[in-house]
Length: 363
Image 1: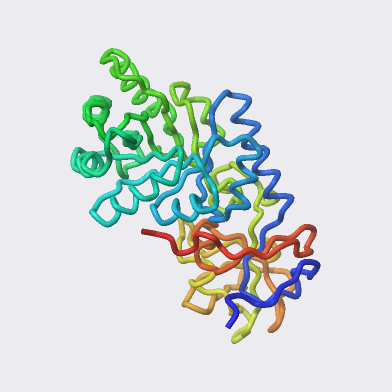
Image 2 (image 1 turned 135 degrees about the vertical axis):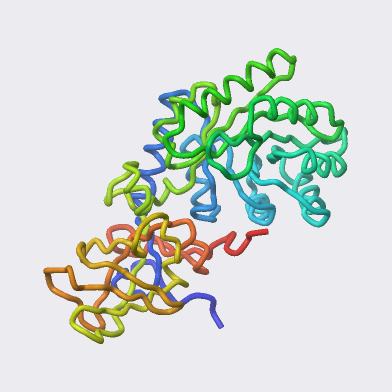
């Protein structure tokens, strides 16, 4: 049985089976070029996070535009891109456990420039026991500059871990990394500047200081100590990025096409896109996606295969059974991982269909 329907270039997207995500080629390329131009203007190296698209073809476009390498989140994800020929990969995740360390060692043998992050002595010990001085692994210290997830809690802690990495024969200190809270540039800069100053005083080179996040994308220049920025969502954009002011509706390359399968009441429509197509991520919204053609209607609930639309506030024409709707997702990255393939189009005409190369690679 085929993993995806028979869809051919030249087909109109209105004829595609639903639910299905589609990517506007022109909008995606414009997003890539706009962000790279901003980074170039401010002299910041750019490293896109491939979690949004999980496709080698899109990552290659990002590199062709000027990106210095790619950012992955898990070993299995990085392995897919290593096998596709990518030579500069940063994994921004604490790698813990014998099986994962063995997989990381095998990956390191195949990737000319592989680096990882760590935020504890325990994680660093596991890495140091796995790698040797003959071919050391580059490790960056992850710093919590306000994001409240992983990361050391102070510049002093960052320097202490950097010294541990620097002294480990099987490791090479690669620098500092953070995923900051939105609008925290001043705090992030203060953390990085303090840590960099202390590293300089200790005689420890700090080649890379990598900041991150699409929400912080166009304020990257406000963290001048950082040498690099990472972002993923920008390549497609989504409703959350619209709310953050980083894009407009016209900059959202991904749409999820769905079909109305029921109209149980005048105020309710049910579509064939549920949590397996739209993701249950709310990201602070009260509903499950934006309906550009039904701006006052709301997707109020999801079950696995059904999405419920409240048409009550909508004053215009209401969709009938069999009509199609177009949805901008709250969080585009999760949608990619829900489907086996992605359909690309230009002006509504299919240009290509690609299996999602790193779908499900989450360990």
